[in-house]
Image 1 (cartoon, helix red, strand yellow):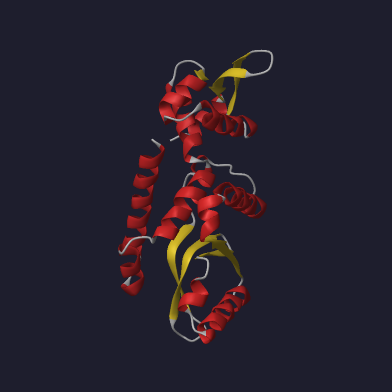
Image 2 (spheres, rainbow, N blue to C red):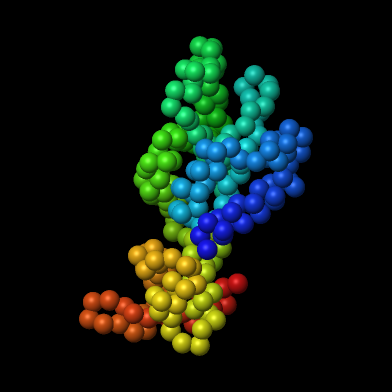
Length: 225
């Protein structure tokens, strides 16, 4: 389920942005994401959040030299704007002149002066240390906006678990979740734990040290869709 769900969600998200863009900005998105950009979504953002809400690919901004430039991803929510740029090792030295190398830091300073938070991720980290960046982004969003509270803000796996809980006429077990998500017990348990901590579900059956079944909190049923 995981890879297909990601691919379907990603394509739907890109299509929505294609419809909403114009000119060169639209053309850039229609060309599709680059390898590094898609890998960032697949390895970091999707496992961390399970959705792309508030995230914009190829975000167009006016350049300090009166032209336009594009941010790999912009996270725009309320009055908060975060620019996320992906850097390959040695890219600047191989492809940029000295002036271009310096101008990128001028552009970054202009973003900072316009109240953007600028985050740069090395490509090697996307491949080799994705879990670190999942945690860093989760900490950032949690610090800025608090813990997820609405159904749409939950991870996609957590939304599917809640839909399962609402559908069954009995408490659900790990085996039910594994069948729904096609994932391992170890992958399912952290999502169940988060739903317990945020009071979407409660323990229904357990042993001395571990819960074996859970029920949906009745007051939460109306928020599941």
